[in-house]
Image 1 (cartoon, protein in one colour):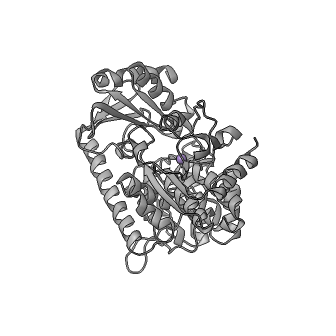
Image 2 (cartoon, rainbow, N blue to C red; image 1 turned 120 degrees about the vertical axis):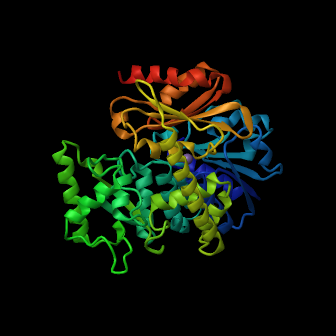
Image 3 (cartoon, rainbow, N blue to C red; image 1 turned 120 degrees about the horizontal axis):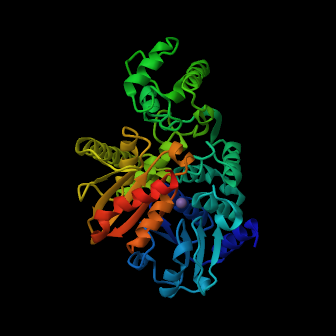
Length: 459
Ligand SMILES: [Mn+2]
């Protein structure tokens, strides 16, 4: 079936249902997916309930309601159809909306999968939005959430903006006044909440010599421009989104010159930003990538429904709880980064590794490793390992690298897939960021094996 036909088939199946259960994932893409579908379904006056799971595995299947509702799996399910089958779910009980690799079984479940149609830069929230729009044209106000989900799932990273069907969703959001798309904006995280020099110093894509990883260097650079006022009269630092057009232009051209002076390409300095004019300025809700972080913080600390409430418009109790999850999230990550700083990493020829034992939860070690890497040798991908509180037999391994090493041939997903497979574990992810679970007895040799594989990729 074609893409539109698959969208309509899922929309039709939902509209025909007497009641629906939405089963979704706890990250920003999963949380926005759930909020989009749940709102579309309740607007159609169909009773529904929602379940969030960290991953779809035998234990989490217990949370799937055991009733005659239509089960809509979103942002998961494509690769776990055997579990649905084992759970006794038949063809008529299920619809799957996913963008992960499918593993088909005997039962021909109805499935809308972005990969079936060659859309590699379209996340589950984007698919969920297209289904919601097929259910009712009035659902275009949900485009904003779809953009948050796509950006949260890194769909805008490679091309410095959304492309294909995801970009057309941006157009819907612009048309209904919910999204402002800013072309050739500064490609940097934190444009609504971070002081500009902090924003620039955390940015590693592109790597700007003298500014990346150096908040002092960034501040000096900006002060040298003289024409840009960096603080408000009350002393508060200004953020990128509140600068005047001329100020932004001054900074951009200085950054271009800095890159050119160091023989670095300038193209990745520019990206498309997605701003939400109806959200208060200088808050994490104001742009797609910071909004996604807020939702990820909720999900990673077991508060996915709080993120869902924020997506539905809660700006009171729910939002305050989400903000406190974000603060908590950031402080634990800061602790992790300084722990890595203090203990140091073990350097092999092609990677650097560190083991944090049980000190930090497995849900955040990857993020922390990514930040720690920006202060370490960028040419060696970082491997971080930790223990799992609920499974003494397993070790979680996370890896991070940067665009520059990916351009040189590094593929972390391939390395972890192979290395974990060899020891009876499982891994996956992306070239730039990947993770694996391995048996504890394999942890000693693991870093050496991954090192060998990285050496083959990029000698
Ligand atoms: Mn996703």
